[in-house]
Length: 291
Image 1 (cartoon, rainbow, N blue to C red):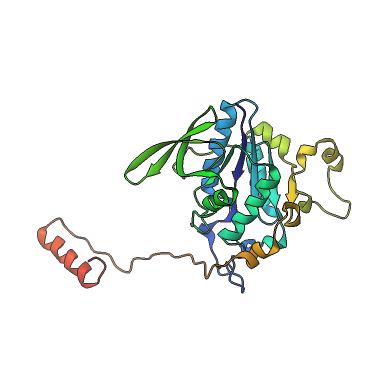
Image 2: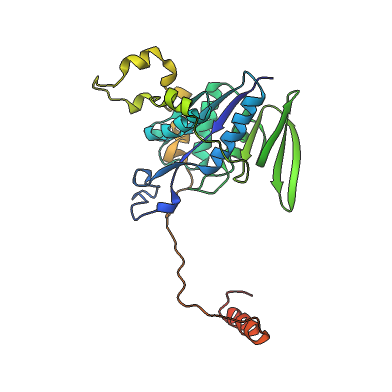
């Protein structure tokens, strides 16, 4: 059976490079001041989607992301690896969204796309670590969901079988389609870019990325190759309720973003003797480090 698959992907700040300008005065993440990367676990999810596409001829994989125009980089990365297309949700009204507002926007976009057989994304994003968006999207779309997936093993007869991580081991789950899956970082890593696909999609852009003064390079190429135009939607395009989008629809806000580096003030060399071990335990207990 052919499958319609939507991959939820996010462009996130590189948390390894957090500086003093990481926050705005309004208490939101200043994404323009931070290097942006493809959320790592979303890449794991993309690989599972591409494997399903290979196993089921006629299947399609599309990337869905929300963010400023530069978030189109995430879609291009998906295209370079084998995705068929993408959708960019971009609108000032989406800015400052927490997980509730984000899941609302994504669910509205999926309704506009048409309910796929499989919605798949990473377990969580490194800029929030909440693991809430996937389950919230499933709830809003009334979909079955399986979280902490390490591999999608089989899709057959309208059912999907997955392996997921649980406390103390792994679990095999079979559930009917349609389904929403969230994938762990210990799943298979995403394949590298394909050189032919890079050449095919290197000029793929969303309308907001293009100059409006009539100086668009290679304009004739965009006319001949519609696949180079990435679909771009605003709040109105997905019939969104402004009160549920962005800051207006977000009951939570980021208080601060910090880059913490632990530095050792001193070091001690201990032997394996009973006296040294007992002395270390006493010191840790006295400082309330343990106990």
